[in-house]
Length: 333
Ligand code: GLA
Image (cartoon, rainbow, N blue to C red; front, side, top):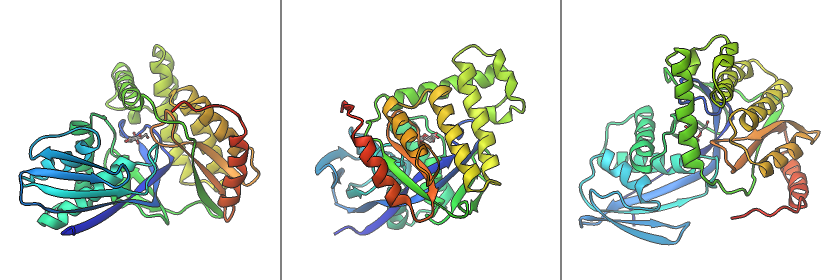
């Protein structure tokens, strides 16, 4: 039996995609699905890591990083100063692909470690430690959104975060609307390398524009001075930031239009969508009860999110799934 058990939710982001590593704004909410981690001391100098989803055990010596799913856990252990062997049991309901399954795992693990060792770690510091795990152990140069959302968000409100100052506040969902999330079934290939490449590109764009981060650009027309694809990449980040701020004042219909614009921008300027995901988004956007729809998370496949009329999410999802299934295209695993 584990000595402690903790869990943390995945998240879905409604507006503010690929802005969180340029000091921008994000507007995610927690999803009901959670990752759960149980752990306890095993009296040896080896960690025994078991994934219930994969039905797989990994053994990693204390101080080593390991492979497969181990770095998500050993990163948390090393950054928390753990020097003894632990048994760790992980299981997760968070689907992989755009819903922060890895952040949920990290936050759940860090919560369990905080409890086991009585670590002095507030919820923001805990989230930032999860980000550090991604950077130093997993190799993804992610921003701060996912871990902050997993650590701080709830399912009843949106969480506005200024990713530069880390100021945040709860924002109500647009009245009369609810959220529908669908898995496109498109596996996220090359997501890590593509993600890090986008990050390098927008850092270069900021450097060429002479700003600390693209958050600081006030006149979007300056992107015209950049060479492609930096121009398009920067245009996405700057326009997306503005959409988050507009979304705070929007009713459901306007909010949905902003989500549709985000999708076009992620597809055309940021180039992180996929033709099948575009099909699924288009099917959603054509539904009368859908205010707006878009790819969510890092992209390159994975999940889509729609804002739909309250009470219709299940029916919309079922209708769209039937059409999506008859598109007759083959998803290469
Ligand atoms: C991933 C990263 C986040 C964020 C999103 C895109 O989920 O982990 O930091 O950059 O992509 O918005």
